[in-house]
Length: 240
Ligand SMILES: [Fe+2]
Image (cartoon, rainbow, N blue to C red; front, side):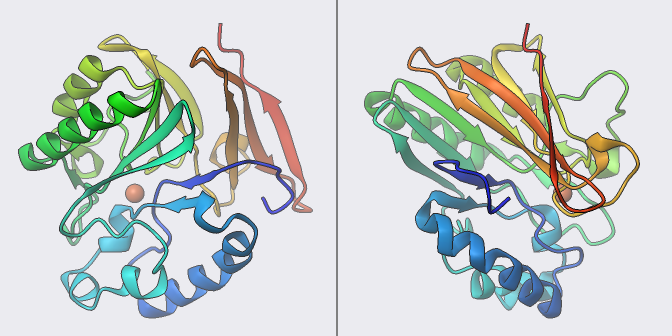
């Protein structure tokens, strides 16, 4: 990852497994060289595993170990300019469910996100949205109730009105990109796992790379996964 020459790195959550202090410390150590290279252009949001227990939320472990990341508690929406014509809007829909892995896209969060879109549209031609949970799944990847974003239809409805050029997320440990019939203007990109091991490249540790053209198209989308020796292996995704 460190070898990539990206302008911005976006991490869509799940730094830890069960929000343990030791896991956050390990994640902070792993992210330290990334912060050194990208500074404020490394943008991190929390996933459900980073808000796994009420105790960890109360102790603000995510905020403690990732002070430069988007905290999300209180005001759960943020935006950042990436280029004069492009910005990213991020939101945090994670909260402790204990033994379940849901997110909660509440009406209040939707209102905050709506307002942020209205504001950002005045300043930027193209908007990228980032959350932790998918709202749309490939046909061969089933959505399970205990794992989904509660209110995912409501998120899809919001996206269908604002048409961000992309929705970046994670949560499901499979790298994919798709367009949903409800939100055809928005390319949904699941970065897949960053640290898991699998014989299936899409389920093995890696990331996604893309460019945004001046007209707002997502260009040159590349799936990357790591070889056994830790070397990045790239596969261009056909967007047609
Ligand atoms: Fe997750």
